[in-house]
Image (tube, rainbow, N blue to C red):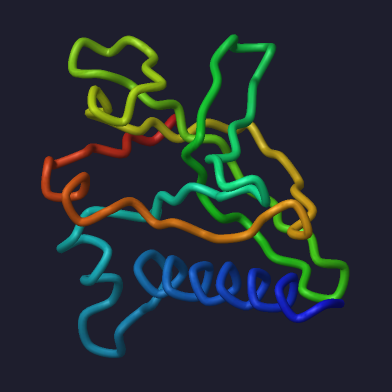
Length: 140
């Protein structure tokens, strides 16, 4: 595996570890207090393609396109990552592809496997977007 592909896999693996700590890390004395305090179980991110644009994925079944994902697993030996699609919604609950109108991300059960050789960078949501109180709602 080339160095860039390996770096992308490592970055996504680290993101997965951090996400798991937020959601599944039981403290000896306080249980899952961390996840209860911050009320989050997803670290939303975008993937940047080799051409420099945001990778988007389309779900034909529910008819939406998104550039926002949740990490599900990383296979560092094969260079594949499994992501779930986050449905981008505006303030009124309509699907939006505009970062300026993004208000909420909704988890879905839509899963995609991506070859990391198609990716040049991983971009977690910016602090400015996170400060806007974006809500990631569970699908289930």
